[in-house]
Amino acid sequence: MKTTRTLFLLFTVIAIGFNTYAQEDKRPLMGNSYGIINIDEYITLLPKSHNGIIKDIRLIDREHAGVRIFRLYDEVPMHYHAKSDAYLYILNGKAEFYVADKGPVVAGKGDLLFWGKGTAHGNGKIIEGPLDVLVFDALARDPSDVIWVDPSTQKKFLGN
Image (cartoon, rainbow, N blue to C red; front, side):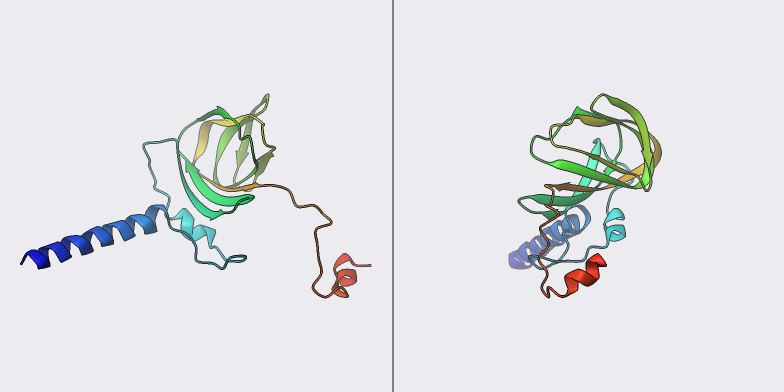
């Protein structure tokens, strides 16, 4: 009887843990250097309400780049990042944003905001919610960093 109860509790804890993982920290399955992520699927995992300012799901974490989605629930105080540039694509909603000494500017669905490392930024009031954002934290790729597997395709690609 003790063994059955212990197994039941163990499976319950595992099930609850798996459910929490699936809801809050779900990661896409992908190879080391490639993958496909359905952003809409991850948007559905973000809670409608939250007791904090932000809830995010990290989709890709690499040494020099990251991709995540987040939902903002309130104003974000001015802050900056010392090591990475940020590119924010607004998937849903509309809000006021402050970047450096500019603002407020209103950005909404379809807008791309970006700033370099060390640039102070934050957001004011959310005008339309939910405010869902796709974020790329990255270092830039040098334009000359294109190595053609078949060099004869370069001419076709460049149109000359």
